[in-house]
Image 1: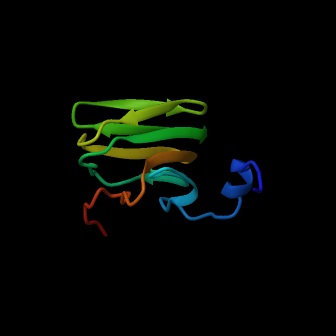
Image 2: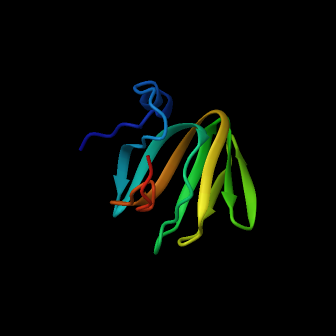
Image 3: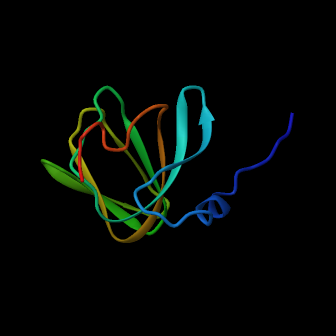
Length: 112
């Protein structure tokens, strides 16, 4: 067996596109994804599954219909399944998502 750590900064340096999660590892039925975000995403929800956001660089916000959470570098937040949400970042932010394999980042909501 080959043992090697995954360098998150190296993985992040391989892409520049925004709002396009890249799978870097899998564990059981969960995927670890890196994504760079800036600006607004769409309102959406993930029925039947929670979603973990871990901020690696910068800060982001998630709007909910009844409030907002700010997540800064070194912090994480779990969005409960079924909660309508709209993530956004005022400046480029690098995050790791942890979610079940096959989850679509828009939760199935159609958008331009």
